[in-house]
Length: 250
Image (cartoon, rainbow, N blue to C red):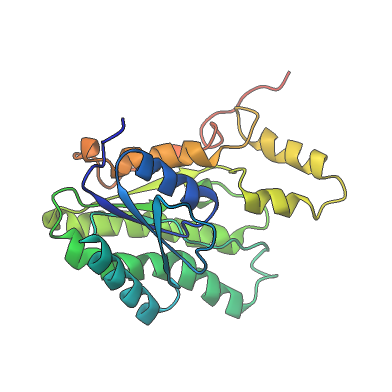
């Protein structure tokens, strides 16, 4: 598969850790020139080009995207990975938190894509991949705001795919299940019994384990690849069977 993305420039938002970093490495391994756009870019290896930017700020996004295109000669692929979590019911979540999470998780994707469109339209292999979540289509406890934001990402994906198909820009999404990232690993440490809590997260998936960042990255790379030129307006679940399988426990 090496060389699959030769000559293409990819932007990965939130690419300094977790799923974003795994995706950046996967695309670079397959030949892409990869720009990581994140709040902090410390510790990136020399295969990746780091650019500081905040997806919640339009001026920051516009400046960062222009700098990437200028430095790397254009933009062919955008991976909208940057996002934050939220825990609570509608009763427990303040208005300010609704505004903050939706601004980052939904409007942030729109900002980045809008800023990149002038370069995407010039590409012969333009692709956008948005990070959704199985929370969009599955009722998870105390995830009202997060689920709403990811439901909006699905709708946004279909709308952008429709609006920009005539521009030659494909738009798809990946919906991961529970992914074992450094964020989740740190999250588990707050519990009295982290081992028990991890076992509960593993058990959510029909496969009996959490999804790996590399597995999500592989799905993103598939949708972003020039080899998937007829795939647009599609959502790919990478969820260990959580959404559709009901496995009997022995």
